[in-house]
Image (cartoon, rainbow, N blue to C red; front, side, top):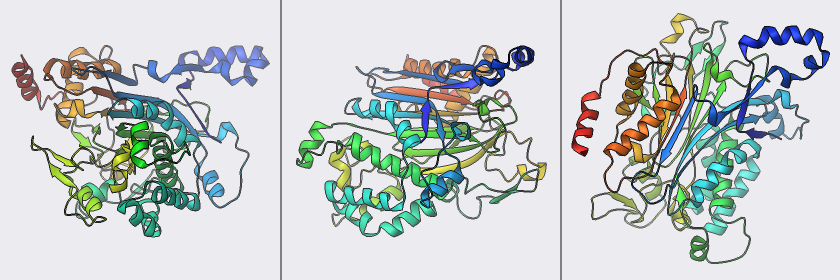
Length: 472
């Protein structure tokens, strides 16, 4: 039905007139759209996308990442399919283009993180389910994994679906902010149409993400694709390890006339729909037009009140969270995260791959009336998004990461300091200050329309300098 690819097609503006002239002389070039477009690999697009990773001081690098363009059916087509009107003969020219960038922090080996980097985007792009299939998947979790957590989830499956998919109470404004300071919900575009900034995803789109994540975790990461009957502990030994997963899905909010041009995120006037999914403790940070860092996710840590409440509400034991000899709180006395892919031994108690799903409206505000700009959560005209694993966030705060990037651009200039350049600079800084047992570090940077237009202020320069001095 749908697909994914590691490249995009771009129409070079400077060559467009030449193409038009040649097209009038050669009818075939008009019929063949590929003659008018350039294919650009997303991993080799340094002016828009940066990526860098290092094992730092570990023997192996268990971090992985992926950058792909997903081709998905339109929202209307998905709704029709969900109602049983299908399968529909979908024209590839009508697919929605969605840019997907993800970071995966593996532990216990790189088996799971590599699986995710190579295949999770394919599962999201090709996976389609209805409510009955989702309930069947929850039943498989209950029967084959078992445990109090999944028994409770399946028993309350209707409330579970209503809470996390239909009504989606993990919206960022409800999780991070109170009702008194979450801002106006409704925004009007220049045509007077209403934009509901807390409902940018349809029920079917949320179901696609939720179902794809749980299905991939169950079949691929935990090994239940192999139907051989065996005790859970034996299967855990056969399919070891686990991984976090933090992803962004970026698409154009305004449907473009030419769907073959997949460079919507390059458009300086682009108004973008940013969907964020979170499993684990990697972080996704946004830099607004003032150079201020905003965390787009909440990490799934044993110290989180929301996570501890979720886990302990389904068990009769006193506590599943314990403090180790170093003073760190661990789940089941072993796990630093309360959600992850893989980690089969913790699945019965709730170490799940369920994603938190957040949605935002970001990008250029040129297509919005001036009076509506203040209603945007981050003020509009955001500069970039950065995805980092805990090897970075264990050393640098959110603002320090953003300031390191902005100050590098201010110092080196826009021509030199591309997203690729600054992502490498972040990893070089971690290598310079990291301790003997520092974790693997990965950094991805996505340039947004307002790149470079932040104030020339380095708010955390002194603290970063101290870290450099103390590391020597």
